[in-house]
Length: 309
Image 1 (cartoon, rainbow, N blue to C red):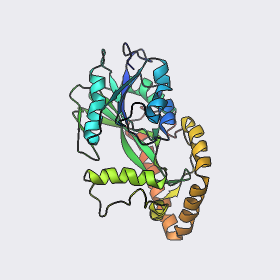
Image 2: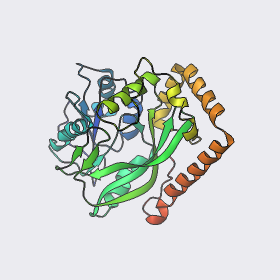
Image 3: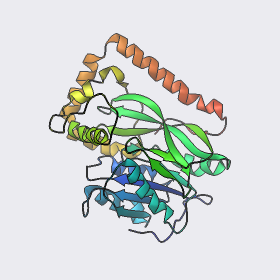
Image 4: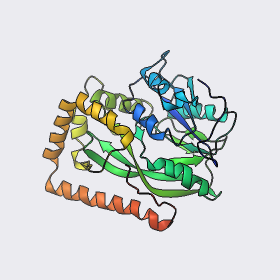
């Protein structure tokens, strides 16, 4: 599906996104697309599924991007993660009108409503010397009631035709020039709340491409909920609201995996000692302070609440 031109939802800048999907079910894709619909002008997708029409493509074709003619999909076989990203980005390079900025996005990330504020108010106001914008992500883990950390995340970058990706796994972007602004904006990553077999499949792909881990992950057949429970020492309760765009999806998945989620919740509670709870609370306070201090670094740059609504 091709759009005739790149039309902006803003009078000053245009924003594109290069997204990749495969054959595996992406349970958060609908929420992901809804969360960025008001801030991204065109969505270029690399479909690695090898299928004539995958479930993920069907979700894309039901999105707001398809409805307004702002969706492009091309199909390429999966080689590695750098190649996957490069092929998606090549579609952006081929647009009739180049965008000003790019949103970096995975299909298991859901933004809060503030992303439009960042895209439409902050990006146009940045100096030409700024080449990228980082934010933070809540890494939700096991069920929707737990998280591992709030991590700094590459989020927006200025478009340039020479941008490319390197590394077969844990790929890195090359060619982005300029300073980086870090904002106290936090969005959500849900890729670690999936059935164990799906998690094992993902980890297995990473391992096959050379991910440097001590031991091979379990096979899909051998995967079980212990994949989550063995990380009980790293988790802490997640108590903030989830993004509005995700709530319908999360409620449906909560019902679908109610029994499994109950086991994980009980396992985390049982394995978290007083010492582990105290350590997790300290890490959480430290991470929250680190995000809040970004307001001090550039006063007046970000006025909206940092919490994802």
